[in-house]
Length: 264
Image (cartoon, helix red, strand yellow):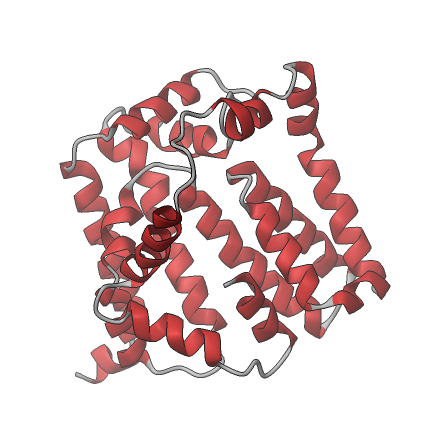
């Protein structure tokens, strides 16, 4: 029992990873996963509707095992690592409560094995906040470069990463006065430049697709209602509403928590 108590956190993440890997090998591919697998057969700096991170992640795992397990291998590791980083970011640790909340979110368990761009994005968002927390404490050269790296990796995963960057900056406008923040922005932009050049060379296909060419019904207010309800369900039908409610009314204690609240 003493061993279990001392190693509860490591055992939890280890079991979580094993379950993810078992699900990854036993579940048939979804249509989107097969589509992104095709990306991995033709690596490039960009694709018609997404940046290239998902292709690289699938390529890495599929190179080891040519089956569903291999295709989802890195995805399963990333989703588990994301949860571990979130645990590390907590200012105070209540292991039992953390385990209960994590297990109540079906999306973390079921969605954590699906090879889609959201999983790499979630991982690099967690990494971004980990390094942003360090950057706030000490805006050193290394921390600035790591922050820039995280920004680029988010954008290489999914364009939605720009929202995390924007709202983090909006939560702390004093960043404009920090040389380290400028270093992070410039370094991140340089790392992301190959994708922008690819977009330019191909006449910005992703922008045309997402803004003008996607098939979508005319906007209805019901879409907004469905979206809000969906956020609660994604956070967990049992505890999601409570988590979101508490998050909105939680008073930020420092710049890091303020960034989290802005990005919510």
